Length: 204
Ligand code: VGL
Ligand code: ZN
Image (cartoon, rainbow, N blue to C red):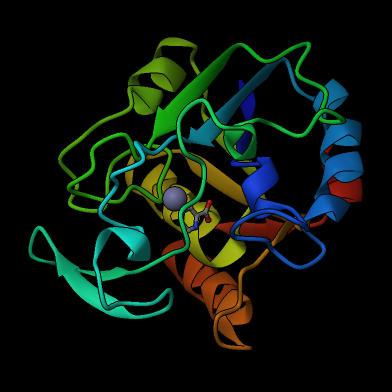
């Protein structure tokens, strides 16, 4: 069984959003065209409390892009984004949600960020995604969405470590690129870890 995993296609990561990914909206029609090729579709949703520790505004004197220690780990500080219940946390209205089986929310613990849809960055909190996919007898996981260099990358790496045959659908993702090469480096890292990098037109 193969599953499509759609990562964080939310207004705050799209042009005009608080943490906008350049051309992020270009993934929407590609993801919509992919969905009929899958019998199982799930999504992740970045879902932070307003006092989340990854927001620069919650650390007076800091700015987005700076790195601090949060619960002992290096943490990039972000503009406030995907606050629970806000419009920015909503999925884009053009994204077809009609066949999604479940949405896995992440980033709810203010003390640790959670880029992956499986586990938080300290590998403590578990969204239940891995157990869910295993119960559904999924063996192949195809990942699309935002952002290539953060949530998509960590989701792909955790998917591999959970034993799933994992595919990155390259043209169905876009990166933040705080540094110019971040997305390219992320793709190399995913490939080195065992992910297969494919294009959407080649998904059967
Ligand atoms: C993400 C930064 C902070 C993402 C989420 O979805 O890639 N990036 N929170
Ligand atoms: Zn976030």
